[in-house]
Length: 156
Length: 423
Image (cartoon, rainbow over all chains, first blue to last red; front, side, top):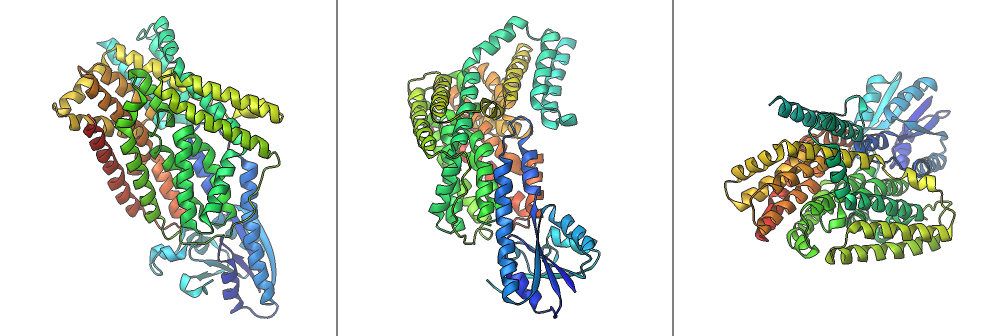
């Protein structure tokens, strides 16, 4: 079975540990981190056209890529430690759309992601417990989705 | 009568165009179009336009000098150095880092204006916290808000202060007497509120990494430009005390930064020129003309009289009305036109000097803090709320509105009270 693990900026290793409890021999993980392009786009909109646009895209892109690579490196190391076959994918865009699109493209059998990136700040049950990305993926994923709640993720 | 109605309609249409930005129209174009229509309609004579613009040479010079200084400071890597120092001071604790970002943002706002914090520090902090794998949005919120909250500590902390001070003139002592205490209270409250608001997102540790340096990084240039910035900061204070035109300090500082950079490395003038918001000159110039035209029609005098009547002869009520009204107006349109209207309205009031000063400083307070009042329902806040919700931060829409509705008006009331007490 090929499993797409959508990893946020933190807690990637925990997600891999959790996924390891349901995998079987021969299963393959695709560890995906999507750099969310939304916040920068929204901040540009907030600024308006009156101010010169001199945001240093090269530096910001590099910072985002470094953070994403570090996240994937941690998760990949954890997969290796647990003896799981894993490949990494670093993408840019709106996370919910990239996850759904890759799930179809890679013909995975399962998509795994956290209910929220910052789960501790929300109620564990009820509508606020599932974030925008997870909700979108649940609605649009072409395949089965496994949603991990905070309580199901081992502590760091 | 028809003449007055047409003039009023041009004014309103200009403000609406700035506020709504139909077809993504640049605010500067809207202001310039409004000014041209005012001239064509005979609401202001061409020679009066030249007089109005020439009278504001200090404002234009200050804006230019300031933007050039910021561009060279950015080129030298000063903002990155400050952000990296904040990360070191944070010692792996996100709360400490947050406080340090507040401190850096406030310092930059105080000496290099709010725009430098909002526009230059924000992306630098974004890159830093992204590398540290911390939640980005609380830090971006901090940069955006502290830029305005710390923008009435000194006259140079916000270009609006220069515009208003140009109109009525006052010493640094008077400025500080009225606005220092409200500034400190506002900064303290802002930091405390945000720390509480984002306490859960910030309850994280980070590993201090080797900061990323740009290929163009030049430690000597960083040192020299930091020294010049210190000199500029001292000159701003000295210039305010001695009542020099602050454009001299800003342009002189810009020239020093240019010479220092030129002597230490090759300058790409096009890069520096691209970092300057040239359209701001068109915007401010256009608004000066539009507001003078409505002043000629007697609108601003009528607005001033209405304010006075509303205040009912009570000084505190007058200060509160001016501060609150300017903040609300700045939130709805833009603080440049709003403060120009308010200054023009105050000019026509039969007040003694202390009363006039208190109302002018109340207008400054409202215009500087106004953009933060977006918490009560501007498009900008709606966007922020959408971002927050999408990013899964722990602030629900209702929570945020509740806090915004209490925090910002409370700050206006506290600030007005402190300004009134100085009367």
